Length: 269
Image 1 (cartoon, helix red, strand yellow):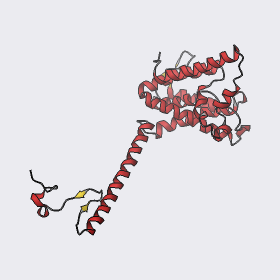
Image 2 (cartoon, helix red, strand yellow):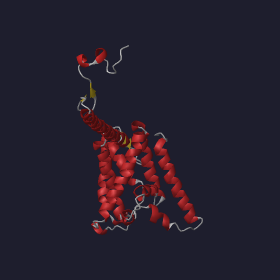
Image 3 (cartoon, one colour):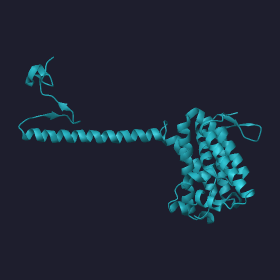
Image 4 (spheres, helix red, strand yellow):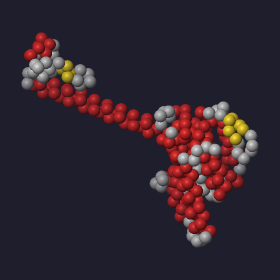
């Protein structure tokens, strides 16, 4: 069995706990939790009005026990393998990237009104992120064999991904599959592909930090060059000549022009 740890464990426990709390509240205490779906499910028209947290929170909600069970089971088997290989940081970046990407695809499609879909429909479930992980697994470990649960035989990862792509496309035209919610599956597959093929192998946060430090260092170099030019003008006004290179570094005069044998400070030990 795959390891049950890290972000895989946290996501499964969180989704299961939320589902059980909702179930108890509705079945035992008969509490109306319609507001939960309105606030935390993915409803495109509400996201466009500013409720952007729904781009993530919808993945924590599930419509039924079977919906939760199969999503969490797939997350455990696929996600645990990826997290063990990638590390926790890159894994959660990929999962979150696919969850948000699936939501964006869903929102975009809802406003096209394709097959009668509209922006007022709600979407819940972690399927977008899980399909993204499935795509990543299929690309990186194409020939890795795994069990096609619950069937007792093994199949290569690339064929499993192919099967799920076909299932996701066919489900779009099946009204029993929830309409627009199915596009989250395709969105997850797309963003899983983009994550593996085009994002840095060391992760989004690493790339962002490198970009930040690159911009910061460029700014500091610009300030140094600017200060050097201002100092040159100041010294020229006082009949003194100083030289800086193109990076703003001070260039000392020739040794013959220096006092004390060429010491930059003018002092000799």
